[in-house]
Image 1 (cartoon, each protein chain N blue to C red):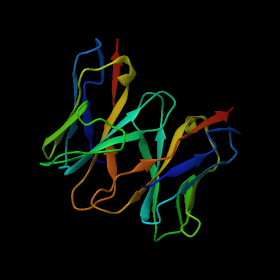
Image 2 (image 1 turned 135 degrees about the vertical axis):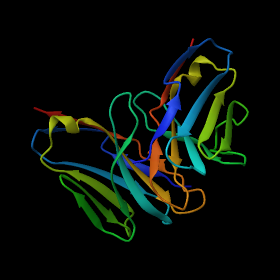
Image 3 (image 1 turned 90 degrees about the horizontal axis):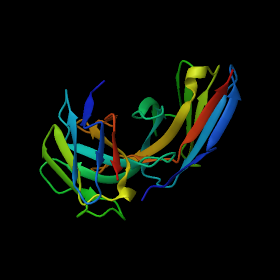
Length: 116
Length: 113
């Protein structure tokens, strides 16, 4: 199947700093990527839909100015957590959908963020 | 928007027995229903999916059923093995330009030896 990578796999930062997470589709072009957040023992909650060349669509309750998403190419989307606080500590997972209306989404390995 | 409910939240079965996880969805436009298995600290892995034009699909020990009228779908695992222990998520998606997948709350499945 298609491969999606994320970098970094884990990050520890101080409160108030910004953290950038990259999501790459390695062997296919992804017109759409999705960003999820997963707290311990909870489900994956969709944060936003990232479309190449256009603004991301955020889910209700997700602050777009805090979680900046950029989808500059068909293989890369980035999520920047700005002014991170301890409550932002979570497991962030991206997924990518192939172009052409295919229904299968491929998930990245996730990024574990710990804000001290 | 779509809302997916899943139960039970935890399930413990004896090795060799069957496990059943049930989900309901709210959006009648949803037409794609994947199931994911997630091991601790890892990404969700697609294990089986079903589309709305099919009522049942089977892949070895795993089967999924869909009742569009009732908006129910279920995962059945037969002859369970220790390696089946994980968290399982159902999900639903409506085919549209957004095509976002909405997850259920998850079921933690434990297989007792």
